[in-house]
Amino acid sequence: MARKIRAYRELKSRPRDSQKYALDYETMKRPYTGKMLPVLAWQDVRRESRLFSLLAGMRLFGVGRLFTRKSWLEDHTEPSYWQITKVKVDYTSENMDHGKAWGILTYKGKQESEVKEMDKVMYHDWRLIPKHMEQQFRDFEPLPEPPVRYVLFPPLLRAMMLAQYKKTTGNVLSEEPALPLKREVQLNKDYFYRQEQERKRKEGTAV
Image 1 (tube, rainbow, N blue to C red):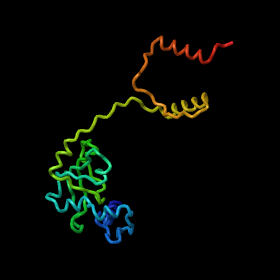
Image 2 (tube, one colour):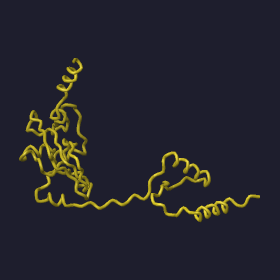
Image 3 (cartoon, one colour):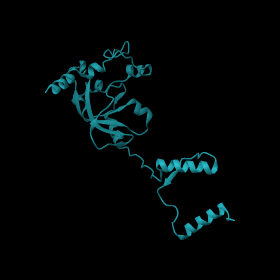
Image 4 (cartoon, helix red, strand yellow):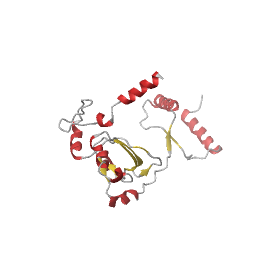
């Protein structure tokens, strides 16, 4: 019982997100921790918005709408966005601009199947996708991934191959050894006969 009471007190004394991520826009410091934001983030803090700053002024707190991030728009040509399915607002925060949100993530054109909690909601780089552009984001079809033709050797076998190559040639193998998934030769009697003849040719005839 005492353990449950301690756990409950710790949970109650834990700072809310509105306290933890509060920001003084003049000094660019978080009052709770006293830490200053990186200088490179100052421009985005002044120009861009946090997710809940956008949600607070929307009908149903933006449930059903699509949101993307500035960093995704700059780094990827494929559309990346969240479709919000659930919002839990921290009503103790000023302007109700803190809380938690859940949704379905589509990253680089590939949509995930499960709803999960959205991360980095306190970052100042969230943008609302306008209604007239939502269908354009949804209609994107990602290119099929090329088939995997080679895989890496197991670590111990790889180390043995590299050591053997260095021992026989005196050089370090420049290319990473890879194991083809598709057999390029037919393992029949002729194949093994040719391999044996090649080995004898390299070794020479015993005297």
